[in-house]
Image 1 (tube, rainbow, N blue to C red):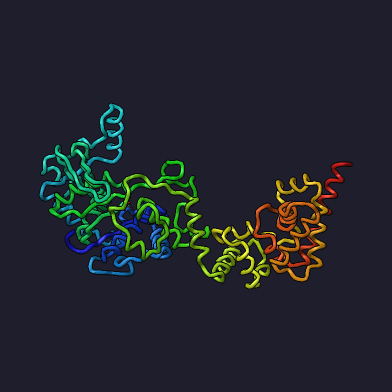
Image 2: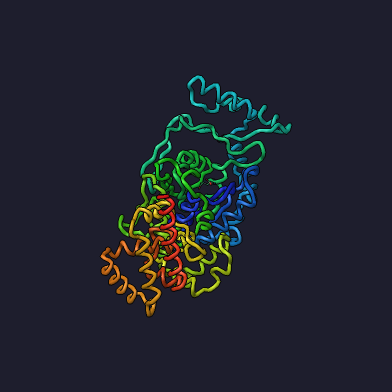
Length: 494
Ligand code: GLU
């Protein structure tokens, strides 16, 4: 590799920051960190109709939340700014002028509707819809005169008719395109703005980008860009195309698979460290074994050689697992804080219900590893915040089907009422003894109690639940449930 490593993330600000774009940003960032290079953020906002300020803000917010800080870019002006393409128009105009002068590009006066009609006709005839070069045949004097008269026109780069364009891709190896398949590409539109391919080449060269790392949906742009580098007499960067991201069903990742934008993941309770770690493994692997990495560790480990050519699958379950790993590593006070933040934002509970931080911490500790995100807290702890438990349908039917359930609930209530303390071990011992006395398995004793206290068959450990509810509430719930089962059974008989 010659010269310093300079890489860029070059989003078009036309929407939110999606995980696909964020993964590209991350790979560039990690590559820069690995090589002690520079990571640049460049906003490709030459499409005036689709670019929005809101989207620029969303990109900044998403990258900052993930901890993907740029070394050069908006707010971090360096020697290669400005970093908004809309502020760099003069450079593109000059470069296009040079190509026109040198006869490597030509003006195209064909109207967009006419081009569309011709493209459709070509497709109908079964031919590739390439530009038919009507304007290449215009005598130069006529082209000059029409331009001088102010007639709107685009500028097209004249592709070679034959030969091939090839490169050694840092991820995919040798890639070759036949030039005959490439169109005479528009580099400047009639609205006086450059097209993506042209602006990207002019800027990547001006910003001295050493490596272009991007999604392989751009692979067909690369031969076009390489032709433009050659035409402008510029040395191209190294290209590395990372694989696309598919949903769990093997189709391109889209809305119907689930969350898409980085901020949606944040709002769903994912931790930025977990999302970064997860995205790093979309098309990159360390040794096929190790999966948990901090951002700094990723920077050390990341190389393009370890990127895969095969599509990456976005496995939401794995993300949940990974988030759980990061979440449970947080101190209890922090986990409780995040749960409280979520409860506040969601507003399902009155703030007084979880105002006591010590109580909330105890509840969070009891839920333990079952919770992968703060959003799952109430799945395991809702019973703490209700007056009366309404058991889920399945567990309720199970209670009804167990003939001895009410009497077991009552004897368990009596035991708890008289217990010297609600200490975990002491209760464990005395309730095992009770089960033995009554001639039932411990599990058959505990399950009805669990349903009576929480409404569910899955909950934190029963003695943790009892400790959290307190003696009075526990005893009341056990007896209340025994009454309800009996009256339901009575009603069924009658
Ligand atoms: N603006 C382009 C995009 O968002 C950049 C592609 C590239 O990295 O060259 O897809």
